[in-house]
Image (cartoon, rainbow, N blue to C red; front, side, top):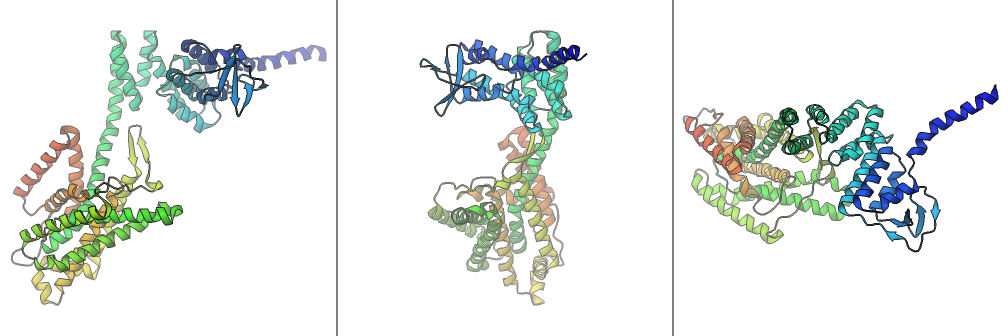
Amino acid sequence: MFARVLPLLFGLLAWFTLPQAAFALTPEQAGRIAAGDSDERIAALNEAVAAGDPALVPFVRALLDDEVKTAGGKAFIVKDGKAVEAATGAAATLPADAEDVVNNNRMRRELDAAVAALGLVSPDLAARSKAIADLKDQADEGKLPLIEKALAAETDAALKGQLALLRAAVLISAEDPAKRIAAAKALSGSSEPATRSLLLERLNAENDATVKAAIQAALDSVQSQLAWGERLGVLFTGASLGSILLLVALGLAITYGLMGVINMAHGELMMIGAYATYVVQNLFRQYLPGAFDAYILVAIPVSFLSAALVGAALERSVIRWLYGRPLETLLATWGISLVLMQAVRSLFGAQNVGVENPSWMSGGVQVLPNLVLPYNRIAILVFAAIVLAGMALLISRTRLGLFVRGVTQNRRMAACVGVDTARIDMLAFSLGAGIAGLAGCALSQVGNVGPDLGQGYIVDSFMVVVLGGVGQLAGTVYAALGLGVLNKLLEGWAGAVLAKIMVLVFIVVFIQKRPQGLFAVKGRSAEA
């Protein structure tokens, strides 16, 4: 009995081990991959990749690193002066006539694709996911057997769906029209921008009318799905621009609404906040490199205080003598803005300076395949909300806020009941300047910092204040976010320049119909 069972056991053992032996990289295969013309090498590479042998990976990586030599139809990996056979890994003596393997750009692309394809059969989920992502733009029919093998073995539902789309992306170029039609139908459920590009390319190259109709239907389906990501992207970009405009205009809403000062140096106060952030960054880089990611937490109060102190100095030295004369304040603050810009050019130079994002503000979160929300923009949205909440609490819940509201509504009556209006003017102007400094700190995280930083935002900030209603916090919020979203919507339709013109025309028409803005100031004075 045992004599009859023993051959059966050996037969079963050979049955289970034969497929693995068949898939092993042979010296002859390694030699064909390393030597010959590109077409022959690529054909041999695809044959080995289709077998899915993990031993192929170190050999391919050695080819990419130019560590392979050939001699007598065999390939050798040479590293640190030691040679091993490419197929078996056994130590070997490198023949004297061994030649270097030269890989052209086409061959390197195929080798990169081979490494990615072999990742499809990796036991690690993250490695398989990365392999699918790497193969999206590199897969061809030579990789199809391995893709189908990985698809059959895949257990993760999400990766299985991605592999099915990857297989369809390969089959869309197949010779059989039926396969191309089936691939087009499979790709119609994709929401990847790369799929749209692939379908557009195939649509232009397709000659079969039936297949062309199927590809067009798939393309329409993919574009309709991508449209949602594009719309949400426009809304997010508009909200991001609106949050920046809100930060820029908050300080101006205080100074212009409280004192009637047309502060043309408001943009330069923002610039001071941005340069304060730059200085703090450099100090951290030089003295506290290990805590560099925390520099922004120090830069926020420093930028506020720097701009607030400059604002207090301006108010006490120049602006206090010009209350009630808005045209004179406009001219004086314009001159101050020129002085501040020249001072910054003298201290830091005329060129833009670089402000680096902390690591936790780099990158973004991918919400949809064609929608990535940058962390720095999200941080500015949150920062603007925090500053707005702080301003609302200060104005509505503090003694200073009570005095500011009182002076805003009726300056003479506030003075009659004992409010030191001159001191309130200085504190309010400093507060507005400090908020401008915070805006500069935020802007340094999304753009260049230079002497002309504030010039690009001063007109927009005045438009926000006037549209929202002079001295009205709620109006400033609605106007900033509304103008930000409207501007981005119009940019996508008419371009950046026409969008600016259209927004300006809209504001002019709106102010003609409603001079007080979205929210009018309510007070008890006769002129109110």
